[in-house]
Image (tube, rainbow, N blue to C red):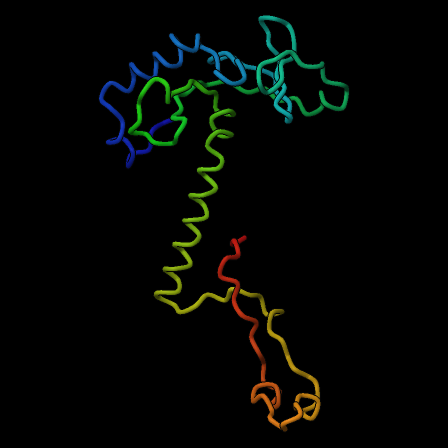
Length: 185
């Protein structure tokens, strides 16, 4: 995976040689998780199985021998080119110890980074909501169906002391409280 411009300063100057060592000398040119070979075109299934041309067997998402696909599965076969990348296991690009680096294919790299990407996505949405609240006032957190209208007669809203809640007695719209911890869609 290419390094984003804003993160380049976090990587050491010898990153190319370090990455090459992790991917080819320590990993043998194969993914550390699924054993897919670098720059090979492989046939893949959506469940992670892939065809190993060298051994003439199907392997599962961990590189172990797997069952052959049936007729329905073969309809979903796609061909992809495998590219290895040096992945940071703790998602910290400044931690370049060899115990923290693994050579992963693009599929395994994305699966490894998935929790980190979900957390980043959540923070991005929260930042956008905060900027919107700062400049445009509160976002409408709820759709119009969240507005509750009180349709009971005023005498049904009275309690034994005769006190009427002002919003319900007048029949005005009452907004539901915002759910501040709801994830945006």
